[in-house]
Amino acid sequence: MIPDEFTNSNFENYQRLSKVQESMYQSTFDYLKLFKIETGTEGRKKKIIPPWNFGFVAVFGEQRLKELPSSERPAVKQKHNNYGIGKTHLQVSLAKRLIKDGFNVVIVSDVMFMEQLMQAKKMSDEGESYNQLLRNVLNADVLIWDDIGKVNWTEPRERMYYTIINERYRSQKPIVFNSNEDRGSLAEKIGYAAASRLIGQADEFLLETEGADWRLKKGAKTHV
Ligand SMILES: Nc1ncnc2c1ncn2[C@@H]1O[C@H](COP(=O)(O)OP(=O)(O)OP(=O)(O)O)[C@@H](O)[C@H]1O
Ligand SMILES: [Mg+2]
Image (tube, rainbow, N blue to C red; front, side, top):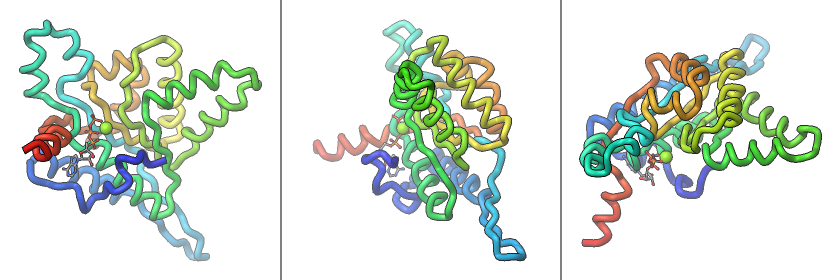
């Protein structure tokens, strides 16, 4: 469930050297604090789960970047980099803590998950595989959606996004998400109705993030 690359990721080994890293870390931690396990009078445990979503999005999304003339792209990409800044690292760290505390957390990665859903929909098993996948993401206490809006837009995909996001919105269950798209381009990728609910429900927990790519920094180090 936790991608291999992030087996060792946690809050403790997320370095906070820049303002962006500090605010990304702090907001993830503040969000974590909204979850509680309370013990009732008869000793029964009760989960307190916030209805708010929590998201990291780009300032200047991938889709918009691709639409720029190629001569302008490198400068804008450099200025507003959103890749490798630790979005997944922090949200996986959050997931690990919530799982440890007893919450039921499901992590999906956009490309793989959308593919699985589309495959399951085509199967001739009276919708069993498809419903199972759907139940899994609709019932989780917390759904973590990594890289949302990565796949290209298609009408059936837009319907899928809407179904899941709207259902969780209706039952006031949170979605934690991160994207290389910005608020505007994310809406174009997942559909306006889905984006309105996803982003609207994040309220103060929506961060537009950009900074230095950690992967490039590491690469540079190993090559000197
Ligand atoms: N501040 C940090 N301290 C320690 N490790 C970091 C930090 N930022 C990123 N990393 C590491 O760098 C790698 C890339 O980070 P991560 O995958 O979380 O970035 P991302 O923002 O999700 O990027 P993308 O949008 O490309 O998916 C990971 O291995 C992660 O553990
Ligand atoms: Mg990521």
